[in-house]
Length: 277
Image: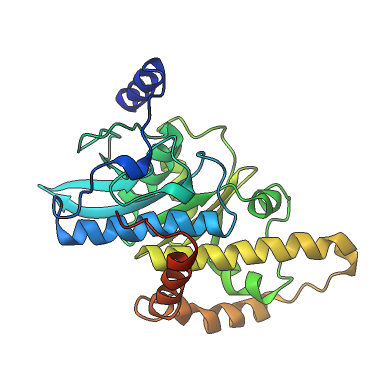
């Protein structure tokens, strides 16, 4: 962690001379076909997050785990200083579980992104992709004492798979990783109190789908609360359990991802092409 923080400070001292992601030479054909596919899917996920208005300038992060190399775990994360809407497959930074760049890059990475994402990738082998956001609706619900309520179908689909982690400041301390993964347990979504949201999935498509439903749950809760909590109908835990079971197959690999991802790629191709370079 100290090594990673030093790299960031070195980048600051260099004056943030960061290139446009689109100007970097393509890595297509220079990495394995499997890594290139993951790079393209992750870059697309960043652009989709921007398209749906979930980005926060350069200050949140999405990661994807790569196959281990020589027994060592690796993952991809955003180049710090690039907007989500301009992310490309070749600009993503490949780092190890100590935060060190594995392949040379003109970019450095966000220390807080490393702490959060390395924690999940190290302890959850089903975490092929991890999204962490600071969307206004997600942050607003994370600041509520009661967290997410059973007000809507969106909420009842995800609430049984939602964990909570108390705020410990900006995630710069590696010691927080143990507590974060303890609180996450085997769930696939997390409310980071006073901070934001997190989802994971076996691939980018499933992690994105979970975030979409969680974001919709938070958004509709905030909108509904304009009438006052006393005016709202909160359904029972039994009903939420039922809806959670009914909705769970939609998050299984081969179903939810194949159902939504191709259409999302068509949408992205029309509105913001260029992630796959």
